[in-house]
Structures are given as C-alpha cells and as structure tokens.
Image (cartoon, rainbow, N blue to C red):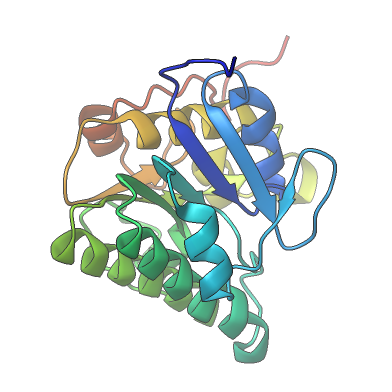
Length: 239
C-alpha cells in the first residue's frame, strides 16, 4: 500500500544550484520534496522552467513551489538573464497560479534594493531599487509575485536573499557589505522552511540574511511575519 503522510508536497526548481542543493539536503526529511533542475541528476528530476507545458504538468498536485532556478550572477547581461530570470520566472509564476498551488516562494535578492545608500538599513517593505540588471530581474520576480497573489488564491513569499555562503566571508570577500548580508547554509534552509510553512496570505516580502550583528537589512519582518529564526552571525567569535 502507498505510504499515507500529511507532509506537504514541495517542488524545488534549481535544486542542483548552490542554494537548492544546500536546502534540499537539510529539508529532505521534512516534506515530500520533489527536486528539479534543468538537467536531471541523481535524486533530481529534469524541468525546464521556460517550458510552460512541462511546468503545468509538474506542478499538478503540488502544495508549495520553491523557485530557486535562475542565473545568479549580478554582472550578467540581458541575453544571459532573459531566459532563466525573466521568461522562466514568469512561466513558473503563471503555472503555479493556473495549478492553484497554495504557496509560491520566490527567490528575490538584496540586489533588488542594492541602489539604496549603504548607510541605510533596508526594510522588507522598501520598494525595489536595483543597481544592476540582475537586481531588476529580481524586482520583476517580486512584481510577478504580487500579480499572482492579487489575482488568485496562491499566496506568495518573496525572499530578498543576501550573500549566500556556507561559512562567513573571509579574506578579500570579508567586506562590510558581504558580512552584513551573509546568509549561511543552515539559515537558508530555515528561511525556506519558514517561507513554505508560514501562515500568511497575499504577498509577503522578507529579507533573507543570517542573524548578523551588523545587518544590511532588517530581520524583524521575516521573524514576525513568517517565523524565520536565524542563528548564525558573521561577527560571532571563532572557536
């Protein structure tokens, strides 16, 4: 007999990417995970997010979609960004809406608000103000999330993810901005967990960084609205 379980069915796009592989490994026992990526791999199904028919077929019967697929390069040009970040995000959002998926989690980025002065701590309700084209595609993702949430019963959580790395930045990478925006692997998994399981409706935008002592962005909204509980700190003493 098939196993009966109340665990939600969660599909992840971009599961072979840096964030996708880290959170999939940490959340595989929590949900009925369906990891997907452009190219199939052991434990990962093939899914082209620019293929509307394939996305509609894959999303049928899914409770939540975590959309992590995309080009993550802040210096990428339009031709590199259009397919995965613009067209692909639209296809995923539209298919989630059409398939009445209960929760859509979109990977936005702190790059969506990178044009604000460094002297200002960014709040989750700050309007997008990107300083590069990559950040503009993340503002597009948030706009798509607003469209889905306002025109359907699918609730959307857009996560403005910071500087993702397993360990705190060191050496030349340990700039004040990178340290203040650091998101650890463990906290990334906690962020995705919270975004999928939060009791929210409509569109929710939350900052996605670790519990850094000095923060490029506020965490109060993420903690209060989606129950995010980060623990790592880029300035914590090393043992």
